[in-house]
Image (cartoon, rainbow, N blue to C red; front, side):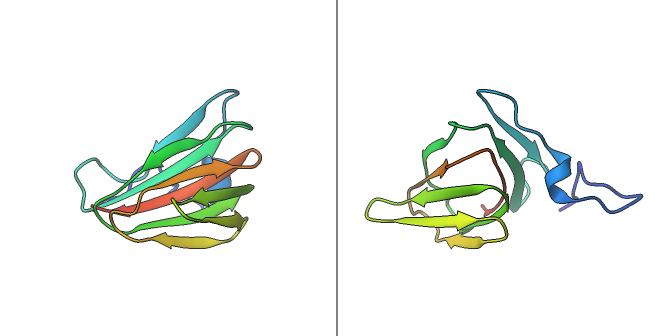
Amino acid sequence: MPFRNLPTEAAAPLASLIDARPGQVSSMALTRLGDPIGATLLAFSEGESVSEERYPGDTLYYLVEGAAQIRFADHSVAMTTGDVLRVPADVEHAVEPTCATKLLQICFV
């Protein structure tokens, strides 16, 4: 699983690798499509979210910057900068930031 879009000559803050665009969710793939693990860096502008999604393997969310709610059918989990959360395989959930937010998503497919 080769990584891509990551610095190699000098270390950099993860949050500096992506910026949100007004009215959009920006994404940067850190692995290649078809790899057994998918890693994506997401930047949400204020008011943007990702509706319900479900993945065949476990998903790890690491909140790089900001704040968000991970909503499930029967509850939600609040996350702030530095928090990590595992969503088990095949569990439907939505990502709803409460402000401009940057999030690392790692999915096992």
